[in-house]
Length: 65
Image (cartoon, rainbow, N blue to C red):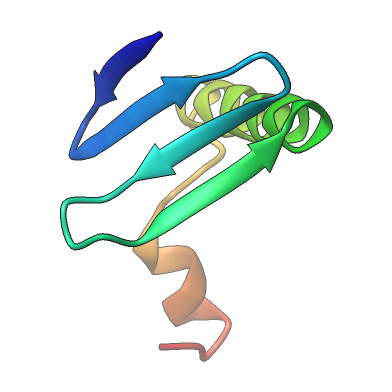
């Protein structure tokens, strides 16, 4: 199965998920990697929805650029 997610072409195969950027960079994710990424994205979405994620300002407050 193929789909688009933003700029990425997403290919779902039996045992892996492949994300390919137009520049040619590709990420092959195992099922476990894909599950962990989904959890990370969901937690990030929840943090944004709850207002506890401030984006770039968090890094600036910690002195990171």
